[in-house]
Length: 81
View 1 (spheres, rainbow, N blue to C red):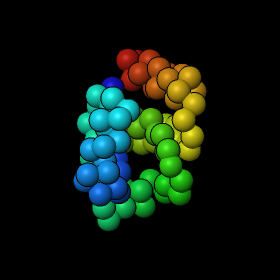
View 2 (cartoon, rainbow, N blue to C red; view 1 turned 90 degrees about the vertical axis):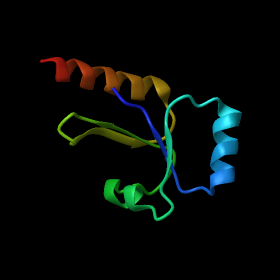
View 3 (cartoon, helix red, strand yellow; view 1 turned 90 degrees about the horizontal axis):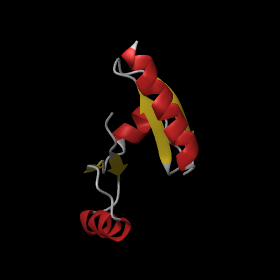
């Protein structure tokens, strides 16, 4: 499983956010919003579980960690089969 963050923020703002929140996973800049457009993101935070085949298994806006974890765990179990 890979967790990553994508932001359109300016570099200094993104670094400040990562420092403030203690994010330990990779954070990438997408200043052109190409990834947001590809995934149909219209609000943040946006969370997606993407299968090994590249298909989106689950997507939502919001920050309900328990819901995200549940769907990520289900995706991991499905990938083991």
